[in-house]
Image 1 (tube, one colour):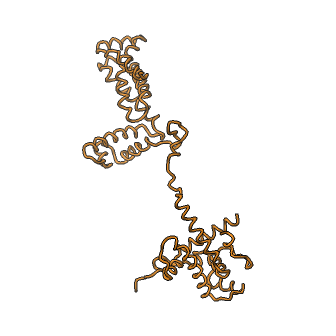
Image 2 (cartoon, one colour):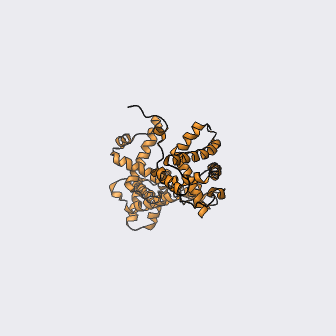
Image 3 (cartoon, chains in turn brown, blue):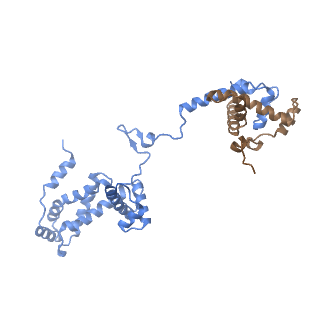
Length: 97
Length: 244
């Protein structure tokens, strides 16, 4: 059996359960109902591209490489996603106070 | 200006050491209820009480207090001394004085109450450790201490804990000349977040809010649903736009 290699073997990946949200299938269904027609695969692409936008703005602060490959890698990192979700919840919580 | 302790040392030093014959004669008079003889016997041995108290001062407690305790031991020794047994009074009194001083140290010098036998072992262990360090330049192991003192490892461990507990400081103890701060106030907060971290977090936060506000409605909705953040009304503007 080949040795596991690559990003997922090092950092794992975020799941619906770990993020506490909906699956891509559920998201695509709700979005289609709202008029944003999409399938589960598009939902995933939209999710990743949104995170890439955020990652691009954040990596500049840390002098990290800003090439597409690095940005894509960071945006899929569960630790990055975890940090973003925490920031979003914090902002939302403060907004409700 | 001389301190009261210096004056006390001087007055205690003014009394001559008694000969064996004088001790016996005084002891006989004390037995007969002669208070003057009792006082002479006590005053003539104050130097002995001071010298023993000084030896124990390194274990904690103020010298004044230890001298008081030591004098109490001396008084007890005077009352119980039996001249018929043929010993010198100082030999007999030393035991009473030491007992009185060590008991006082056990009861008063530590924040945490430690059994007197453990403290007595702790003193022996402390002495062995000091000598060992001087001779070999390193600390002895528990088993080595046990071997030297003839104690089992459990008692050595308890004694070592006793030494540590003896130096326990109260967190509410006042420190400094003005006495308006406690020991706890001077301890650094290891969980405190540095100013740099706070500023960095604020910078990141701003960058994230900026990015979030640039997302399209479609992207924002997907992100929120995937992250399990409460749904927002479709007509709402990007909520992060408002917060920036």
